[in-house]
Length: 113
Image (cartoon, rainbow, N blue to C red):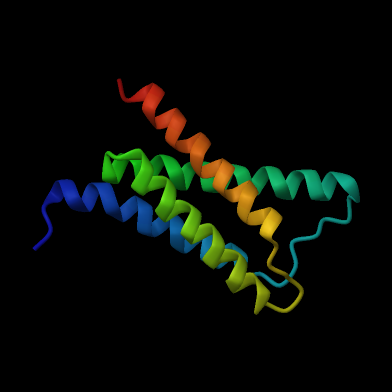
């Protein structure tokens, strides 16, 4: 049986990962704003994965495993999008997501001292 500390550490990670999965299941998120649409979507990618990186670092208390799990989830998210009508997976997005994970871990490191 998981302890309350384990639950309080991992429930937010699982909930956030589920939210990312749900958003990735939406067929098209285009706003029709041209280049601004691209900038906003890439910013959203970075932010959502920064939050995941922060939560993973909080749950694991170790940076490298948190980064590796976050980057693997980013790759699986892009693979998932490949199968969603109107979406496509992109290696560039995996890199942007991994950057977000790293930023989230950095924020956790700076704020947890």
